[in-house]
Length: 258
Ligand SMILES: Cc1ncc(COP(=O)(O)O)c(C=O)c1O
Image (cartoon, rainbow, N blue to C red; front, top):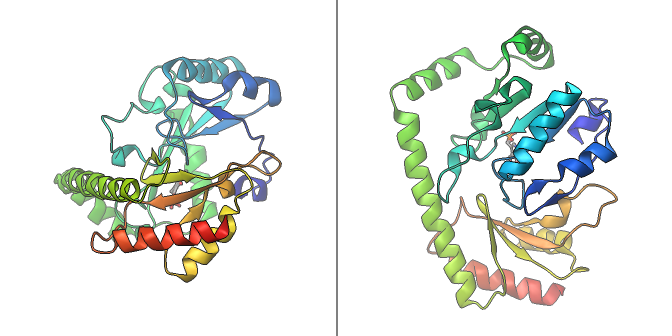
């Protein structure tokens, strides 16, 4: 929606167990100027772009002189193993515009993001940023720079990853005890897949009224595609003393919706 409102014509490309289907993208959008991807962990299913697909994407960008916009939205909070290196850090980086924010790692309210781009684009990007929005507060930028330089950011990330991993285990264990059939771990979420036809958007609204902030999987699918139904549970805000009761409450709502 953001791309459309900026006058771009986005073409949705399918994602499978290896990530974005680059061959399909070539056929569907032969003249694409850029590809917007989340290669580290696909949003929202969590699959990482396979090495073969990474190469295919870079080959496409090189051949067609197009750009890869890499939204590395969860790299710092990769809970399992090591995060794969960013596309912007390896061979092919000259075709990659890497974007990120501090919304998840610190807080959305600080309103800071960053772009890592090939040197030739820096002037143009700086001009665009200048016209698009008010520059972020200087004091916040300076404070964050010092926070990083003095090593606090990396300590904070280490601690945050540990806390989120514990919360995710607690949520998964609780769901298992409640006999919830399949729970896919994806990024900072756990997804409960639902049968097709299950109205996940309605369930999410009902849950919200009961102060359970879950979100529907179907909302992530492009218009006109076959959306899958599911419930996305965030792990970051889990309260250990409430998780059992909240899961029971949610499951009761799910049974009454199906
Ligand atoms: C795919 C994706 N990219 C980026 C972001 C970060 O966006 P923002 O910093 O505007 O919250 C999110 C947040 O949920 C996301 O899901």
